[in-house]
Length: 291
Ligand SMILES: NC(=O)c1ccc[n+]([C@@H]2O[C@H](COP(=O)([O-])OP(=O)(O)OC[C@H]3O[C@@H](n4cnc5c(N)ncnc54)[C@H](OP(=O)(O)O)[C@@H]3O)[C@@H](O)[C@H]2O)c1
Picture (tube, rainbow, N blue to C red):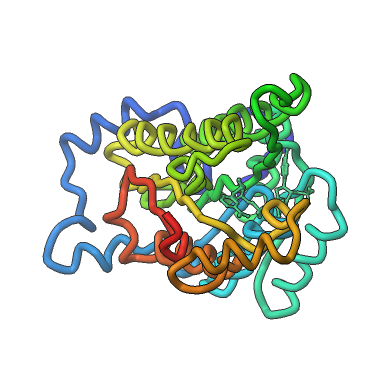
């Protein structure tokens, strides 16, 4: 197991140094990639079952917790993360372990680049590397333009726009060959409802990040996507809304209800499974048809 105590970037357990992308691309150009050959190429893109590690930011509750639990069921050792609710993060990790899985939890504010680096260091120290990163941590502040405060706007940018960048930067440096990176976007980028302007803009950034990063990671067989849920039953969505309002949203959804965190976790599982590998550089809308 690789130990990380000084926070410096080192080679991961796969032997892939974070700064060796140029060498990696050169190697890829001259050496055949054995697993990509043959008709069984899709199945060959699965991550080895004995070496699966997933890091899920913002996984103490809501969608992230469901993703952490689902990836644990899929056989991944999981790093759970929170910013405030350490008790909930510890609970998610304990639930996973109680079911026979392996999990750690770490408090780290994604808006702080040093904290994100530490989150990856701790994960690699515990599990030897990272195969999957789900950049899920996010916040939503809603107000009409005329009423949005600088404080609310800035915090949303710090967590969603900057935080998403910090997580993807570390992921780009460290995710092992053949891995997956998924960033949580939102279907609000299409709906564009009043009061959602800055939040939707911060989520649209995830679409662009993922598409560009997918291209930058060429040669490492890592698929990078944004995942855009619609209305999902978490406090982020339900806070401040009446039961009638939520029922109204459910009625406007072709499937007759709003989403549950497990609906989104199932899509993440598919993207991170062997058959999800060919989906790369996309924004995947998972919203029950609301958009
Ligand atoms: N719910 C929806 O309808 C919906 C729709 C589309 C997209 N999304 C996106 O899906 C993601 C998850 O949303 P959700 O509904 O599950 O939200 P949620 O229930 O409010 O949970 C948010 C999670 O993110 C963590 N978090 C918040 N700020 C953080 C920070 N600075 N650093 C690290 N972790 C942080 C929280 O940790 P603590 O518990 O410690 O606060 C919590 O685990 C978000 O990116 C959101 O934009 C949600």
